[in-house]
Length: 305
Image (cartoon, rainbow, N blue to C red; front, top):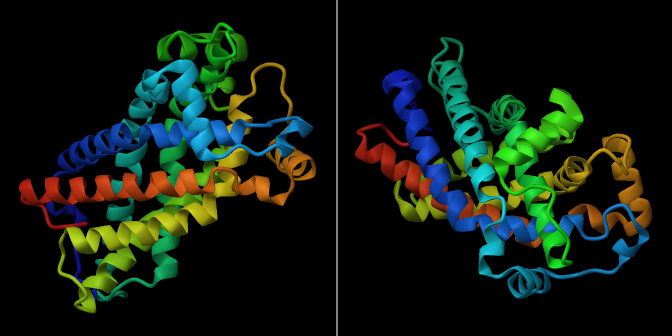
């Protein structure tokens, strides 16, 4: 039986701080993999040339050769800013909602079904992504700018502040939430897979005495949650990335148009472009985040997630 944890036992501000700090560490460690995933997903975007495939190793080599090692961290600052909003909202939101349901009289402290955890995780992710969408847009645009630099062209933005300002001036406030629909779809699927699977898998490992509540249990749970969230979210992630990267001269009218054109021009497999870099990032990201977050909670005298 899953041990009941009351979310309100620790100040919300403390848990927000710990989640933000853990997310910053995880994002900094795994960002080059995220950049690789984004470049792979944008390869061939909007043209039939997308049928020519390029692998993750080829993308990394090209970035290192043309932009230098520092090019692997293009867009890191808006990514960290994004996670200062996105991660605390989804993590604390999930924990509070789950605690509310577990603490209800009808539940009587029993373990929540996986389906309920999935819905709670998805809902928490949607709220978090709506808030963090502008920072996500800036991150994707700056990551995509690296391709212009590698071609000897001037990048659209010199930094996150200029990117935010230019987008606001040329595309309006609404432009900051461009691609928010596929963003929300992806956030629901990612958090449905990540939060619910990590939570459920960790307690399964502990309850079956495969491991205690330690780094081994956290590692196993993070691997399983990373695979589940990647499989579910990769198609929405491809659509989201392409929708957010297009500027005023839009190639796609909406998310559905992007989905149809991508499949028509590049085949169904294109929806899972960047699958392995995504999984390779989500696995280490979740490992670093969850191990850090659980450790920080322990040091702060707060029960585990």
